[in-house]
Image (spheres, rainbow, N blue to C red):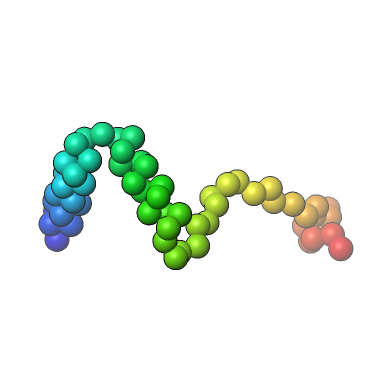
Length: 63
């Protein structure tokens, strides 16, 4: 089954590349326009800082 899924992805990738004449920049422009025109929320995957709580000598979290 995995091979069928992978094969389908390869076929889709080839059709998409062919549609844009194998021009990566044109493909990127297309996806950027599609993303901004879509009705889905765009989520930022930027790294976020996490505050660490200090532990006491007994290993419990400090208040």
